[in-house]
Length: 380
Image (cartoon, rainbow, N blue to C red; front, side):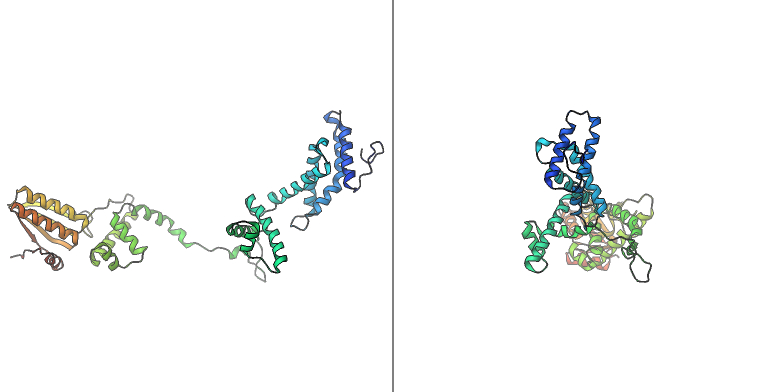
């Protein structure tokens, strides 16, 4: 054993580096030729002999937030690993043991002492930032800026900021720490607040799905009104329709959304349906003697203008009726698309010799048509 005169090794006390290397060489010679089960005693002797050396390395890292006893245990574990892996042909045992022990201590700090998980690359950068901060503080006689740290470490400022913020993850404050004073409150009581919007999550998810069932125009108008904070007049100018028409479209879309949210199976959106009556169609055709009557309801806009134009033009071109009457009694407004459809229908009637009669229009609709040169028949 180490400490006996038969080995020629000095007693197991704190000695210089040469003594530790000599003890390792003696250990290698002692176990040469011995079976594995008889090497344990020599291994234990070398470990006990090198314990003071491991203790000195552990004490270099005291004062960094870890108990010295824990660091010594980690250093001893590194020493055991160094003894088990030692090969005298590869050089000094002292150098190899120092690298192994210090590596084990650093691994302990890296993996076991952080209160919050931080990527290894960022942990290494935190150490570099700390060393650079100390050096620059001494050189500049003040705390360095982020730009100066980035220049010293040749690292982008974004990464320097991330390292400075992540450094707090090494020893985060406990949520159970008392606030102080006579109050019994804890730090966690001051963090966060009740989220009242959680109760509306289901409604938000439901509405987002229903919005996808609305036509593009209605979705766009809702977005402009409630997300873009635009007035109805601004929306009307954007779409080329009246402000009253925008109001009706908004009311109709919101009514459908409310009904759909309360229903197990939402009713399909009725394109061009009149307000308050989602089952009523915007256009109906009937024969009245030798006259074809086209009845309209709601608004004549881009959604219904093409259907109106096609119906009237086909009737005028077919020549199956002496006249085509467009009944606007149920129409509230006519936009430019509706006016264009009526003008196209009148032109088709002129080519085929069939009269186009517009009847039943209210004052506002009559005024819009008059500006376009469309006369409205006055009832007898």
